[in-house]
Length: 409
Image (cartoon, rainbow, N blue to C red; front, side, top):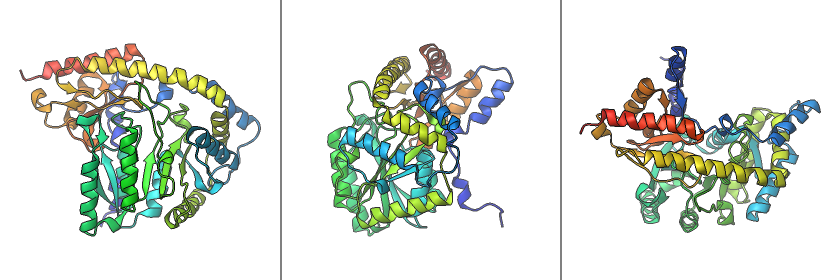
């Protein structure tokens, strides 16, 4: 009999696994460049007006517990954002604030998934999606983003899979279908037509659709973002979002889940999400007041985010240009978020797995990235393109040279 639970083995995040190795290398005096975490505040400072509003909340003594599901003022601000951007009319009870999207994932899986239930994820997926599902003894049904089509969804394949699930009587165990747009790890922004067809299929098969839209303003290279909220009116769905990426405030740990409809499933989920929020008592109160200012100060945000996204676009395209010089990588150029997800020819490089490649790369060159298997897509790598050009040049040249030295010509 073991002390730890069987499900606890799923409490892991491969994005940070190699941090231990990186820390040891730094202790040895080695230079390490970490391109593994999507943390914009590391290189692009959180806007001053948001930081100042956090300080003001402290100075004003706003340091006590808040309403478990979030300040009413914050819910009003979030509702205003979605009205401005997407024409959505939200009620207070449609919005549950959480400690980042991660806590929203924890709450929703705990609320919706019983042992033996399933969820549909598209691979490559963000690793915590799988962790939270497995931690609740849930099973996964994997669909695919198609690399040959710029990591969009092939609707015919999805339709065929859903039809099979229905015929085999497995569909009734599927609690939700979750996608990310813009995508982590591929950087893809789904085409509106594709998104419309996904929404139609979810409606046709009675699926509760969840869209993680945490990068919804970080879109570039001519792409246009469409929120599920614009397309899914009248059907059960939810949206995940937060302060971390669009407002460059990762450490504030402020996210939210929007459940706009009032069907039976939506009403049950909203009520239970609040129950889970009450179990953990309160969010960070100063962080919430900073979020109110961040979202409501539209003029300042629009001025700042335009410059922010322009800089991300420059850095991402520069990084892709460098990687395209590597004959052992195949790169799909991202048009959202700040991740690059190239396919690597492991056979020509003499590595047995993408995990072995990533670990050896770190130990030999000091460049830290993440293996694609962590996202459900072996023989791929995930890199973050947020660093300044000089750091990207240093790190990616070392990556490219490492590949050339290991190539089996």
